[in-house]
Amino acid sequence: MKPKKVRKKFSYYMANVGITGLVLFAILPLFWTFYVSLREEVSITRYPTMLTTKNLSFLAYTHIWRDTNFPVLIRNSLIVSSMTVLLSLVLGTAAGYALSRAKFKGRQGVLLSYLVIRLIPGVLLLVPIYIMMYKFHLLDTYFGLTFAYTTFTLPATIWLMKGFFDSLPPDLENAARVDGCSRLGAMWRISLPLVLPGLAATGTLTAITAWNDVLFAIMLTSSNKSRTWPVGLREMIGEFQLPWQLLTATAIMSLLPVVIGFALVGRKMVAGITAGSLKE
Image 1 (cartoon, one colour):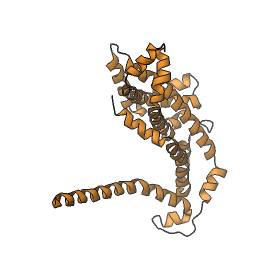
Image 2 (tube, helix red, strand yellow):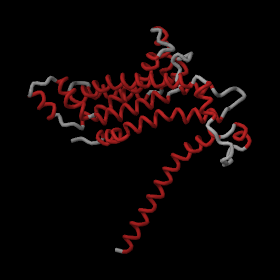
Image 3 (cartoon, helix red, strand yellow):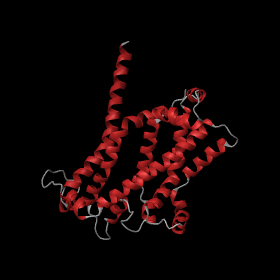
Image 4 (cartoon, rainbow, N blue to C red):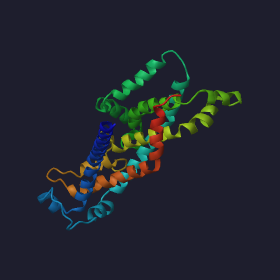
C-alpha cells in the first residue's frame, strides 16, 4: 500500500507541475506584451529584455485611443464579427437540425462536402471571392467581409450544431408534435432552449475566427469604412520602423472584447462543448 501511495502522490505532484507549466506558457506572453506596452520606445529598443518598473505609463493606450483610428477599427470588427455570428448561427442551426433529424439519401455526402469546404485553405479561395465581391459591389463593405467569413465558419457551425442536436433525444420533440406542435415549433420551443450552451460555444468560436482574420480583411477592404483592427495593426509597421510600444498596446486593447465575451458566455461555452461530445 505504501508504494502505491507514493506513486499516487508523485503522479499528483507531476500533474500539478505540468498544469502550472501550461498555465505559465499561456499567460506569460500576455503579461510580457502588457509590460512592453507600458515601457518607453527608447527603452524597448535599447534594452528589449530588461525588467524595470521605471518610467512605466499608459501613454501608449491614451495615444492609440485619442490620436489614431483604432476606435473605428474596433467598431468595424465588432460589427463584422456580430454579423458573421448571427448569419452563421441562423443558417448553421437550421442546417444542423435538418441533418440531425432528417434521414435522406446522400446525407453523409452533404456532411462530407461541408467538411471538405472547411479543410480548403482560405488563400485558395481568395481570388474567386474577391472577383465575386467586386461583381456584386461588396468590396469595402461590412456585408462583403461577413459573407467571406461565413464561407469558412458555416461548415464548422453546421457540424457543431448537428452534434448538439444529436445529443438531444428525439422523443422530446415527438411529444411536442403529438400535442399539436409543428416541426418548426418543436425545434423553436423544445430543442433550441436545450442547446443554448451549444449556441454560445459555436457563436464564440465563430466570433473569434472573424475577429482575428487579417487575410480577407486586407484584400476586401480599402478604407476605414469597413477595415478591421488586424489590418490597422499591420499598417502600424513601417518600412523603417517597428513601434513596439504601440503594437503591444493595440494588441492588449484588441483582447479586451474577447476577454469580456468569454466572461459572459464562458460557462455556457464549456457546457456546450461538453454536451456536444455526449449522445443519449
